[in-house]
Length: 436
Image (cartoon, rainbow, N blue to C red):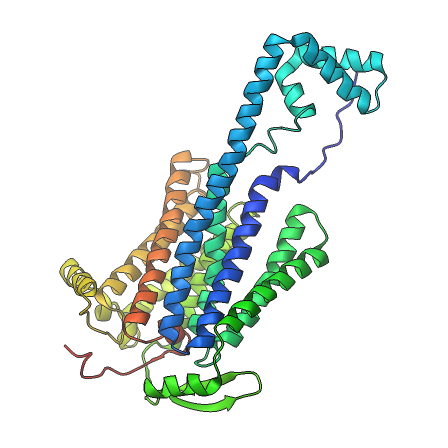
């Protein structure tokens, strides 16, 4: 009687999605960063850079999904054709197929008699599967999966593209290309290391390969769109910018708008915002990881929500709910004005932004609550409660995506970096055009 073999952890089952994931993330980082660096080299206008980056993200993600689906579908069509051909041959010439299988095993080192026995036994057990595996090299592990490849590729492209785009939104004026390049190189190094680790390959070689090709792509794009610093300075000056500290050695410059800033977001609001971002990300990353860590993150998020509710009642002006929580009519009116291109600019949250904040707080609180309920005796092992928890967690991602899109749209519409404002706490004061 055979003893149970020692389980071995092989990585070949990851080939299908890992290839699409690494390629999607790498393309997202490199193509979007190259696009941003190229536009930044030709124009220092942040709004133009961000518009180009967002267009690249959307177009690239859809292109990756379509390309992966078409490519892998072609592979799948070929596999199906081979399966149909092999099925027909087994039906019309079983003896010839048996001889063919025997010859394969002889070529692999078995003597003819043993090879014949193996071929007979495997044919009796699964004739088609044996030929697909040993004659054509096909198996369930390597079978093409077009939908999986398309979804993984599009998702990882969007995640990869978000990094240089976010860096461009946060980088100081005039140094966007430098910051995006640096962040991209770090991201590529991390991607190369993670991809190599997931595939069981050498980390150093994988990291170096991704870094070198990514750097070459960005350098080529920046060179194609490069213009002298003097031309960029003249363009910015014509648009009302005050350009200073020009660094002619490396082509970089620093610029700043001559306008005052006022404090809008207090320290607690900013700390809460970025802590919640980190908490939600950590909760998603630990969803299938250590249960204790995932639950701990949930308790931290619940505490943050509770503190924000209190601060919304007693905090300073722009932190209070009374400043930005409005009814459905003002929210719909703001959205109509936004569609028509005549929406007001607000120092605090606009009506639509306020509604999104409330929706996020309620959804995150509901997710934390349903997660805690699953630890109680009443709902321990409840599949219904688990489904509600997962549905709310998915809704968080949808709301976060809409929130980020709204922030980017308003940043472009009113020429103000709202992401940077949530870091510094300051915003441009209202002008006469901004006032109702």
